[in-house]
Structure formats: structure tokens, C-alpha cells
Image: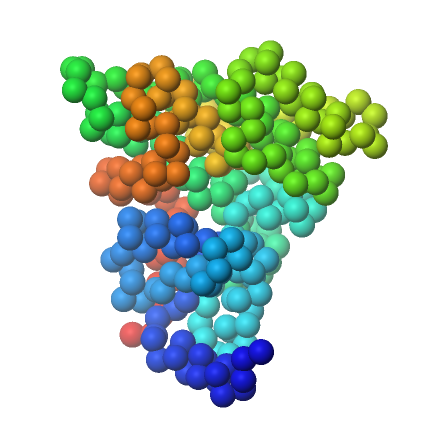
Length: 297
């Protein structure tokens, strides 16, 4: 157990470092914010991983507790948590809210915790133009293939299915399948694999069915008038890691580009492409401006 002197020193060091602490769920999230998107904000903001020195030790609840602890010690701190925390915390009315202003107005964890309007940070990387940039860097043929919203939407049924499996599982207090679940299956084969998983994981549920969850997911892109708007709306509520993994695999297979298959490595590449095009989501840009404005001069 840390001594009082050690704890006191940590508080003094945190204050001495200056700037407003912004706690994020993981070291990877910090890397994207601090190295790719908001390095120019680091005179006022300090991006900190809730994982600390232990990989995998972060998460939404740790962010919330660290922000509360820091502010009790008079250290200015804010937190950013993934939308999916609302699912595990059974705040389902907010989780399934399709109206963005209503969603953000809810503030279920108070003024200092921002709940992302998208499932998790990977969702902010699912920009077709960013993928197009990465494709053009990796192929020599001309013209370079264009990755469009229509291409992503052609995979929507499967993305919706694996996301619905996640929401169903978490709502029933079970772990979500890993990001690679069903990655080699499509269409009817994926449906069969999901049904098999449900029967094995939920023996106590009579005829477990993810169709109601799927309908709620579909609603996020239902009222949009074109492909770009539909993808923008739908991608808010898709399981981010599963979607990124499946899209990278699909593009790798369909375009014959092996390097795109490695979804974890693609995160930094896509973040760079988005920064270079100045298409960082306005939700995040506005949030960083707002928090930064609270820093002492």
C-alpha cells in the first residue's frame, strides 16, 4: 500500500505538471488524442490513460473514479468515456437515444464526464475518405480505388448483427464476444454462428433472439436521406472494434491489399489521414476547445 507521503507527493506532482487532466480509457486512446489529433492542445491539456502502468486496467468506470478523485484534490480533470458504458450500466434509454442533442443533454455522469456519442473511439476512424487515403498509399495502380459510404453500407447487415450480439450479451450480463467473433463468416453462415453462440451462452433464455436489438441499431441510420448521412448515423451505434476489424478484412480481401487487414495497426494510420484532411469529428474538436478554455492563463 502506498504511504501517505507517496500519495501526497503524487498530488503535488500532478499540480506541478499543470494543465487540465483529460482521462481516457486506454493508452491507445491517449496516443490518438495526443499524437495524432490534439498535440497542439497539450500546452493546456494533459491526456492521461486510466490504465496507468497496467495495460487493460482502464475502462469507463476507472475514468469516472479518477476524475472524481482528482477534482477532490483540487486538480482540474475531465473524463471521456465510451457510449457503451451506458449499456453495461443499464442506462438503456440514453444508450438507445438516436437524437444527438438529447443524448448529450442527459449527462448521466455529471458535467465533467463526456460520454461519446459513438460506441467507442474506433468509430471515429470509420471515415471512408480516410480509408481511401490509406488505400492510395498502398497501391501502385491508377486510378486508385475509392472507398465510399456505399461500400461500407454493403457490409452493414453483418456489422449490425455482430453489434446486436454484443448489446444482447451485455444486457444479459454476459461478456461480449471478442472482436474477431465470426470474422470469417458472412451472410447466412454468420447468422448460424450467432445462433449457435446464443444457444450455448444463454441456455436459460428460451429462443434467444437479437432481432429487437438489430432493429434499434438500424434506427440510427433510418431517417437519413443519402448514403453519407446514413453511414454517419449508423456508425454511431456499431460496435467499433468489431466493425473496424471486419471492414479492414473486407477491404483487404476485395482490393488485394494485405496490409489493410491489420486493424490495430490501421488505427494510427486512419487517425493520421483524418487529421491531415481536417475531418476530426466536430464533437471531439468542440469538446477539446471547451475544456481547453477552462485552463488558467
